Image 1 (cartoon, rainbow over the protein chains, first blue to last red):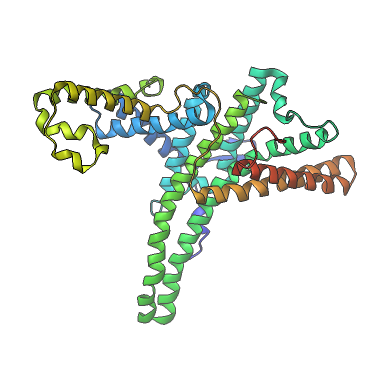
Image 2 (cartoon, rainbow over the protein chains, first blue to last red):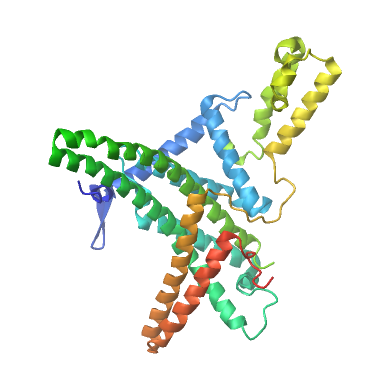
Length: 249
Length: 151
């Protein structure tokens, strides 16, 4: 009945101690490990044959490659393709975790902000370090727009820097909030059925058809959101990487 | 993983079309209308043309396939159209604004604590953060060009 219960972290077994903190293998880690192993198997088996007429599995693997590759080319240009393995990994990882969350009794790893924040910070520091290595101090041209009068430049630069720092926050919160809100909504509507049936008996169970229809519709919507948020996360990664490749125009 | 290192896996997709091309010359009557799916059902009734017309159509199909599969081959420069659906856009715009304000507030509060200038850091940075949030929203919505503020 508790709609938050589904997000609870459970320690499955302990891996030892680091200082006073326990390093435990949790249900979250289990789902992430399953996603990584499943994705690796999918891609390795799917591309093992390399047939001219692809099998279904090979076709799915090639389609996912083509999808991400065209996304990277259209947002970060041809040069962005050097980050293709990074973007592809992030997209497939997030997409798989989102879809795993929709399986009944599954656990939605991406509904914990620590996971999405770690991914977003990884993108943030990749952009920062690659931009600095590639362009040196010219990377900071990113914060200095051209053609701005000198007397408002300090304020503009401050705003640009704040805008840059706020990126990992909006990047991570978007994915986390979408997954969290969607799964809570599903559980709340499911709870309505039990409440109606418990309070009104047979009439209540019959009335429970209404929230049940809502759950069906929400599940379809969640399927869309799961894909869409993985896509948006990857597209924003490309846009941010584009700034590291071409800072200040 | 050869899958990730392959530059144009589209060649694998085109291979079956090449195979179909050879087969088509054998039994061209039966499959010729499949080549141009976009010409509509009206053309399906037409009798098969001779070999020259058929190969010209196959060439056109090949060109269209190349065009459709590699839209941004020549443009190595940046492009900034993130095409997502309306829901995603809505969520994106709201989080951009909130993120800007939050970062401003956090930085202002930290500056207040470190420099002991309370409450001026919070006041100034909250306003700057709000401006950054609005800038984020405008960029996400594509109202202003990404890096050029004043045009």
